[in-house]
Structure formats: C-alpha cells, structure tokens
Image (tube, rainbow, N blue to C red; front, side):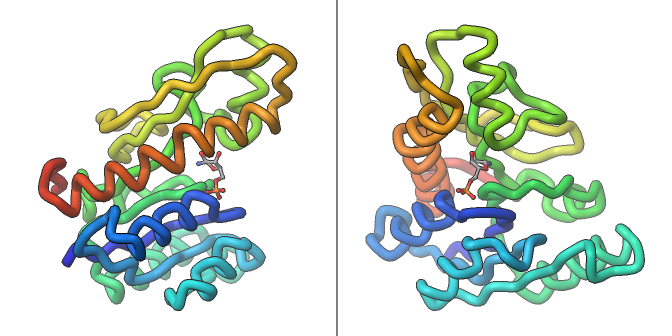
Length: 200
Ligand code: GRF
C-alpha cells in the first residue's frame, strides 16, 4: 500500500483529482494518509474532510521562526510516514532538510511545460499571465521530482494544452487544470503505485 501525504495551499482541485482517482481505483493500492496546508483557510482542507482524510494546518504564522515552522512540518511528516509526498498547489518553498530526507520521493505539479515559464515567481495565475504575454501557442503542465532548485527537478510527465484566441489567464488556467494537471498528476501517482515509476 503506497502511503501518500499531500501538501496544499489553496483550492485543492489537484487534491480532489487525486482523492477521486484513489477512490475509483485509477490509483491502485494507495492511501492518502494526510493533507497538510500552510494556509488554515485553504479550501483543500475542506475537501480532505469531505473525503474523510485527516487535514493539518501548519502555518508559518504560528511559529517564532521559519526553522520552527520547518521542524513542525518535518515532525508531522515523520508521524504520517508517507512513502511519497505530493505538492498539489503548494506555495511554500520546501526546506532543503525535507528534500534530503525524502530524496526523489517528493513530486510537484507545475502549470506549464518546464523549463518554460518556471522557477521563482512562476506560480498560479502568474504563469498563465506570462504565457499570454509571450504569445506562445502551446502550454501545459509538468509533474517533476522536487529538488533544491525551484521547478528544477527531474521531469516525470508533461501534457500539452492549446492556447486559444481570446484566452484570459483565468480561462487558460482552467483549461490547463482540466486537460493537463488533473490528468497527469493522478496518472503519475498511479504509475508510482504500480511500480512503473520508481521513487527513492
Ligand atoms: C494550480 O495552478 C497548480 O498547477 C498550482 O497551484 C494551482 C492551484 O492548484 N501548483 P489547486 O487547485 O490548489 O490544486
């Protein structure tokens, strides 16, 4: 049984896609052992609750220092003992200590075709604003391993999405989520659960 912990910050649509895929069996032999959010108000925590999954709000605001926040996050992960950590709309910078402890066992979904439109500052709507600004005709999403370089880890899967005439950042974000993110993230986790993709 693959144990996964999901880190979130916002709406949790990628978390929802994962939970539905686990429940349907698209992702076999897998248990989501916990959802951790740095943002107490994240709707993703509501989604976890609706699916009967333990949710934990671990906010930097509740700690004296960043180091204390990182220690609390690592302690929670120690307690959950996941085989795989999934960053699904997670906006915190992952501490190097966590990357060391979970080398090649942390994956992230990025809403562009890395290396395009990636790296510091490229998150959420900013990505799609930059895509439209540059005028590219194809964008998409990427699942990659997380290492010390922001969005720089080994690429696992990508899926292309057409940019359409009249797209706004919001419309493009929705299409990238529906046609790419919610497809490749569950697919990669399923392949990890089946042993097709090796972690660690
Ligand atoms: C999505 O664009 C995702 O690619 C990025 O965070 C955004 C919010 O995702 N990582 P979610 O709805 O919270 O899953």
